Image (cartoon, rainbow, N blue to C red):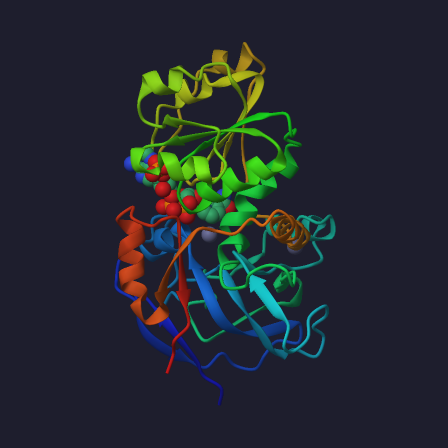
Length: 338
Ligand SMILES: NC(=O)c1ccc[n+]([C@@H]2O[C@H](COP(=O)([O-])OP(=O)(O)OC[C@H]3O[C@@H](n4cnc5c(N)ncnc54)[C@H](OP(=O)(O)O)[C@@H]3O)[C@@H](O)[C@H]2O)c1
Ligand SMILES: [Zn+2]
Ligand SMILES: [Zn+2]
């Protein structure tokens, strides 16, 4: 009987403990991956804490997986044993609904999320549907690529979805795991980039990562100094902020786009949208093709996450580091099961 070794939480806000389980026979369209590295996303933390009310325990987190294919189901396509691949937020989708057939598999109503009712990448092995097992470009550094599979696609896809022009002035709110990648992508896309951060200590690093300007994300005066200057404002923070002032940084026709899961309601004055024909929007990760294109773009522009590394056996220390707001800028866990 096969058994997978993993780190799992058995209830909300509990520490992760070693957890061994029998995954059963591999599905005909599934791929099994031997995990090498896995990023730690804030969504892992939110699910560990059951902040979204949809966690299932035991919960094996980890959805920024890098590893090698070690087994393939009889009808798996596109990948073969030995391939270096990545798996992100989604591990499967129905492949026959209108969303799947139109290339929007990430929006499939019956998509299997990698860490909800499915064991994620804080493990020695993880499985996913072949279409969601994304081959890595050979020129991409596999040791740091993991965070691209969730954080990367989440901040890259809005540029594609909303046709952000390379001449656009773009703001990024929150310079954490997602936000620091957004600075790198926006700069490579050609945009003029403003980082909005609550951490003064991140200012120089934000500039090194692609920001042309840095402003406070909490101080209203600092935000208002950017009034009417931005075409696109990407919000990666997940806390209540001065939304009216942030909306005011948009030029007429500008757009404020949410990827950070702010749990509180976001109050907005209708007149602030109406008068300048401004837009509000949001998006989740992206389709398999979008992920593959993002990986190609990252490889071509030498975009790599800025990471801190922990052995997977120190996963609880890593989670505490992220929870304490200390991650600079994404944590990667390296597999070390004995
Ligand atoms: N839409 C999607 O599909 C998707 C995908 C992945 C993640 N997410 C969500 O995106 C959010 C960010 O994820 P992440 O992994 O980037 O998290 P993270 O690494 O913890 O970064 C969040 C950043 O938000 C800012 N922030 C945190 N607390 C703050 C406070 N009290 N006041 C002001 N700013 C604060 C900080 O940036 P500064 O230090 O610069 O202020 C922090 O680095 C989470 O809600 C996550 O669940 C969504
Ligand atoms: Zn579907
Ligand atoms: Zn994530």
